[in-house]
Length: 110
Image (cartoon, rainbow, N blue to C red; front, side, top):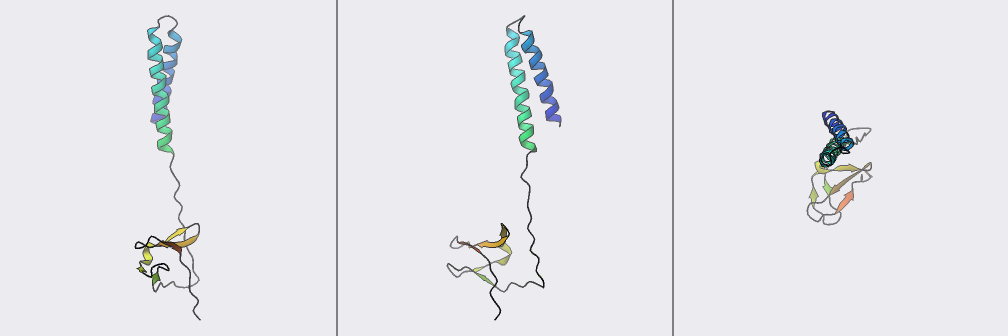
């Protein structure tokens, strides 16, 4: 908020100096610098306020969830289930050994 106020003051003073440059040409440079500084501060303030929203996915299961082991289908290495991430609603994990990223699926019990 303070950045927008400072930029508005600088732009206002810059416009005043630009209008007054009709009487003294040296005011043209000062007006251009003040206006550019005001626009720069406004842009930096706006960019600092733009943040990416964080999205948290939560998986609900009907009963308790127990992960026995997770193995990479590419190299067979045992993986840490706590490193699992939900991407686009699908649980996936990346193997630190071979770099393969795959979806984690539940094997049938029968």
